[in-house]
Length: 62
Image 1 (cartoon, rainbow, N blue to C red):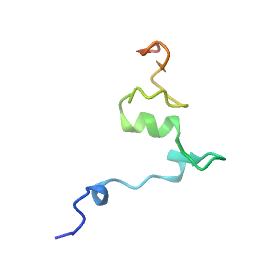
Image 2 (cartoon, rainbow, N blue to C red):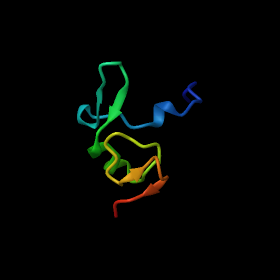
Image 3 (cartoon, rainbow, N blue to C red):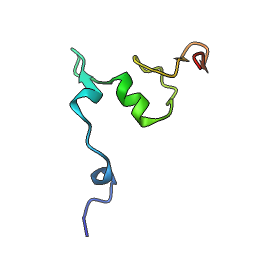
C-alpha cells in the first residue's frame, strides 16, 4: 500500500502537447488538453474551447 494519501499518484501524466510554460514560469493548458478534460472550469482559461467569458460569467460559444 502506498504512503501517498494525497491522491496525486493516481492522476494521469500530462503529455507535452497538453501544456506549455509561459515566460513567467506558469503552466498554460492548451485547447487540446481542455477538450480532453471534457468540461469548462469557468476560470477564464487562455485557450478555453468552451467560450467562457469571465466578464459576463457565461459560456458564449455552443
